[in-house]
Length: 177
Image (cartoon, rainbow, N blue to C red):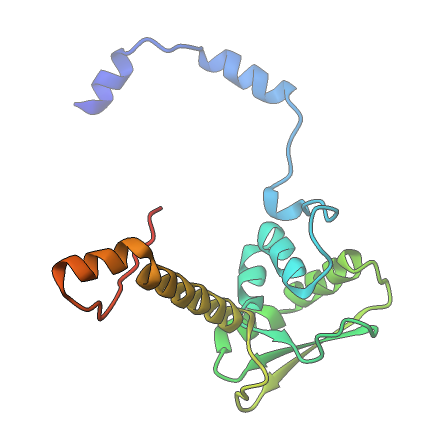
């Protein structure tokens, strides 16, 4: 029934004109093959990950489960550490295709043609080594706690506590998107 109705609707543009226009327009590469411009991103490890998330999302997102073993970025080697419990992310980063892409993009991103990449598995999680995801989560928790403190100490909240003669035990913050 639906197909019959669609067939009875008069087309806005004929198929032949669409086909001719398609042949005359240049072919555009797939977005995953085009590297975004680097000039807009800061030359940090997180910056490289953000850059890779645009050109190769699976690799970029898998690298968020890692971090640099030596974060100084002063030498000619990037040693990327993955906790041993990050199997999927580690395997994604370790494929030959992704390692070649990571090496190529890191050399270009850091403007160092001699840069070498090494991926290591870290046997146990130490409090000194935190993945990008863990650092993001810590920052989010820190911001959340700061907001809770600001709300709890706000003069309107203090006035409401005095008026209703109650104490504030917990604050639940829901993000509005």
